[in-house]
Amino acid sequence: MSYDLYFARRDPGQSWDEALESSGQPRTPDLAAWDTIVAGARDLLGEVRIVAYPPNWELDHEGTGIAVNHWEGGWEMSVPYWTHGEEARRVVGLLYEVASLVERESGFECFDPQLGLPIAEVTDLGSAVPMFDAVADRFGRRGGVEV
Image 1 (spheres, rainbow, N blue to C red):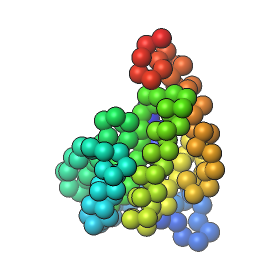
Image 2 (cartoon, rainbow, N blue to C red):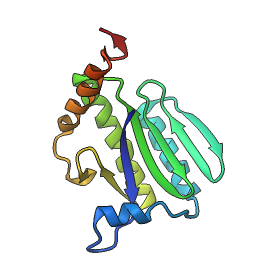
Image 3 (tube, rainbow, N blue to C red):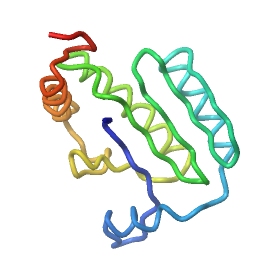
Image 4 (cartoon, helix red, strand yellow):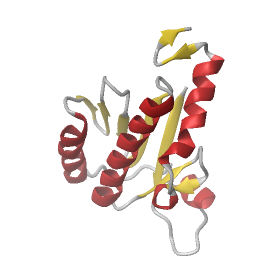
């Protein structure tokens, strides 16, 4: 179970539902954007693991669980619900920073389906924290530790 972010190119007046529906179509991978995103993610997160199996590329950060996927030319991000409270807020902040980098380099817009908003319209990263806390409570864990 993870907190997911989706990316799409929206036409003027196009709804997010329409844009996300059409975003599943295979595209040509953007390896120049990928390379820049990997470098920027390393600057923000530190060491990351890269898995390449063209036409798919994945970036994973062990410490936070943040993953960036460039699959068949599309983009997607996720982070597991491992954290809660202030640590969840910090992880969501990093997730959004990397997502902004993906937006800037890829030309795609990022949508947060949990909040129902594009990330450009999210004004309080803390609004995601209750979702992390609820999942941690449901599974009887806090920060990956049984309670």
